[in-house]
Length: 108
Image 1: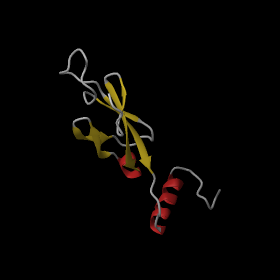
Image 2: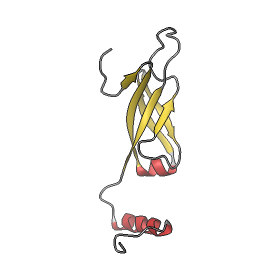
Image 3: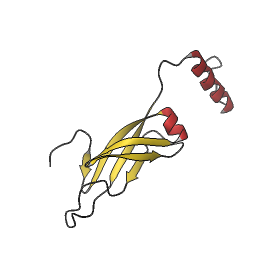
Image 4: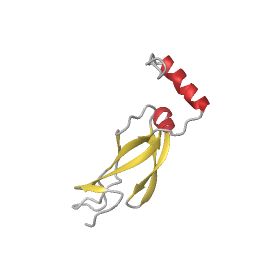
């Protein structure tokens, strides 16, 4: 079995990583995920954490003893934080920090 740039293999199961934005991680949504036979859309639940692993059943390698069945694909979520925030976005994050009882940089 050759190495693949998208997957690592553990028996019949595959592992991969997918980048998602902060907003999808916090609010939920759908993201495309590569599979061995193309791609699928994976549902991301609200409040998904960075490095959380989501299991996609039956999207791994064919089982050796039963090639009609497949292992699973484990997708590690990599949350990407926004960059180059506008003043309005910074203000919204400061308001969110205030609502969560966290100190803003001016108060630290």
